[in-house]
Image: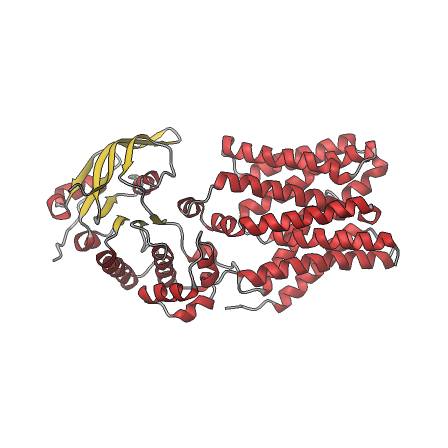
Length: 257
Length: 232
């Protein structure tokens, strides 16, 4: 097996797995609408990276972090509904990207270029993946309680403002990594789809988390392997493969209680 | 010996520029059940949330000693966790300090639930079961103060009765202080030490239920004739 394929597979599995794990926290409506616009906000960064020839995650990351902090501040200040803020940020991100993106490079920005990942980038992806896994594990219970009822979380001693910020930063890292795998347009699916499939088949929390990580990793690996044999871009194949797993999970969906 | 737990002086709370509570003062002693009474929109939940330091306010809220607080808000019911892959056991696992399984079982028993409920999904419980589970969830941290905001919303009459009797028996055993919001006047008579009534015009009353709850006062609070049956 060529080394490039192995690197692609390793980073894909890490990004898919961590995306699935993060997705399990996106249960409330408020949270699930954040990942999409953040990913689109990555697009201008990706465009800049392609123009100046540096790594697209490196380009995406500052934009996504900035977007995360912007959403955090805007929500605190304006009290506008998250959906509203999301729409504004989504449009600005895509709009800016379309202004500066060289048309010849559009495909790479929109659907990713994981098959060109370098050994250094793979290493960074693996390390960041592990870090995010660790942080999500640490904040998981508290985030879940906040999702269910924020006031109760506050009374239980959770610093909700800090946790919201941490959470947005994690989304930013995962989105920046996701841009590698599937591009800036459909990154949100990387986070949303595996968790949805996992939710269909799990009764309790631990099974749900585990299933989402596995679904995420399998989607990534499946898409990458299929792309090796057919002449189609990897990113969209990863998402479509994940969507097929989702359909299968619907069939196996039982009332687990 | 001074038994005061909480002193509130000239409390003012405004939300989005609208005054909700104005110059409210009262005191709560250890071991009391204080019922907050009032029409919809009078600021009952706002008062509870303010006392919990969840809302900005002016005036003094002084707690004697640091209290261990439990809170059951009005909106937290089984619908909140419906369709979440979250068992009752997982739900207890969300606490800051995760209790041991044996302890959870004994608290479930205390609130009249079977232990096999632990492996059921929290969202699949009935309204009454979920409320009981929440009572256990709050009590297991051994708070000395509980805030209980309309615990029987959406529960049938019998279910509501048992929740209150349950709270009352735990209150007697554990020497808790309870802040209770309810519309149910019978409950007020049966279970509370003091009543604080709020109405939208900024009139307040405070005292033992038998002293202050007369038809005239109720008319002031709720704005309509209300028939009152005294219970003993």
